[in-house]
Image (tube, rainbow, N blue to C red; front, top):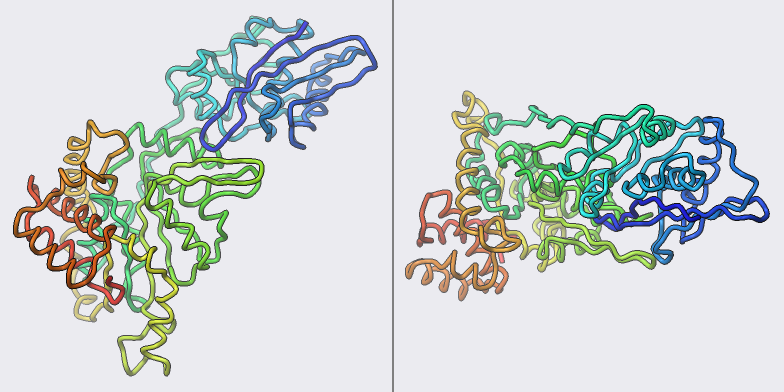
Length: 504
């Protein structure tokens, strides 16, 4: 008799079904696991043996073979412990085989039979729902998996509790979804004095998910401005929250099964490696750009990042997804993020102050900012010079407009875009529009077209730059409540693209 259980193997945010087949046959006593298991899966036999021993269940003196099908799919992770144990218990006729076959299981076993939390419960629940099966997982993973309404989640604390549930001795109630996490500690733009132009640029960026580059002297407030971006972004929609949480589930970032409606804000250090930023390493895990999906990726001190890291951002910025290609894995992750980058004008940071600049000025500025390649620079929709804040601004009372007021305008503009692109697949905001859809939605009036033609001829806008100006102008019009893109909207969009020393 061959008993069967079901589990998953993770490929990016996708959980691929895996059938766990267990056969007990006469022969020299052995316990073998086949089907391309990694070291953690191969060691499952010892954890399963010990857990069953803790339940006073002795393995028969026969040959036990566990096959993980499909056999050519790599199996990685300790979450295979529970499905292997359930298939073995079904083969021993301790639990009903038909009930085990109707369940997708994942979980790690401790030596005393307790179930240990594993990553990926949310994607596994999605796969179980698609297959019409229930999900069996550790108690600590239940609140996370229960966010998928279409699946029944059984979350025992131990293997003993799972056996009692399947044999009908002590049935377990389905797990309940975790709490919606509200951080409540978002920083407020009311704290920022001066820098009105930079605030305006970040409002436009938040409304249309446009990428921003802030260039200014040390202490001008670049990092302070960027840290307040999450406070003006609208909450994640239910679909976006589920998308984002599936990625965070694979890295163990979901706290006690709770799902946050706040948009992610990731700020990796400039010493981060390529795998840390775009994904990779053992198991091709998601990187910072995927963890920032539907949120903000803040790169402070942009020229200090290794050139190789910066160049790997070019394709994900355009496509909204990244493919991590390794010898044994090709994994695709979504990464539609809002990129906010900050840079000093030169290494010393005082290029615009003759009395404080270093002896190499102004050549040091060209060398320093020259680390940002032209193709990458062309992908920033808004480029802002952030001047030092005058004492007269610092001495002013608290600013009158805070994040709440800005967020209200951003939310209204986002609502307009949601309605505009309701029928367009994969398009949520103006930054996603392209081709005929962009021409239709962002076509400026005659005066706006004339201005754009003049700017293009004089400053040599690339085709990418031209389309990015159109997207920004469309967002400015949305903030203005205008159905048509007019000359003032185009003029403001152009001014943000040509305002800094990095204009081009």
